[in-house]
Amino acid sequence: MRKHYDFTHAQKNPYARRLKKQVTLRVDEGTLAYFKKLASDVALPYQTLINMYLRDCAVHGKRLKLEWDA
Image (tube, rainbow, N blue to C red; front, side):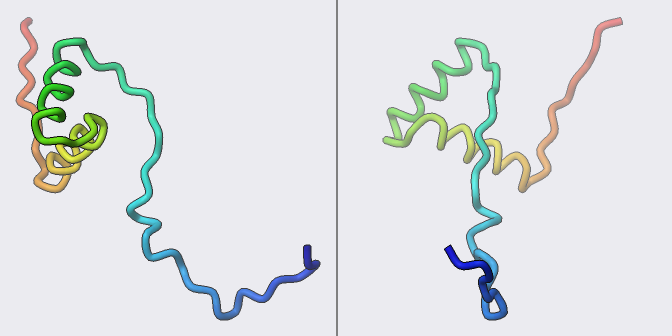
């Protein structure tokens, strides 16, 4: 390895914003079964389908209407 590298002409990775991060997510069995079935119907991996759904929610600012019983 060199002792010094010249990065004066380096460029940022244009795909860096699209990188994915692995997380652990607890999902109930029924919800997971739903996404797995839907994923097989459209020939996509279920993780990709869940990511697409969550991204759509984030882009459109969708929020759940939560009501707590008193």
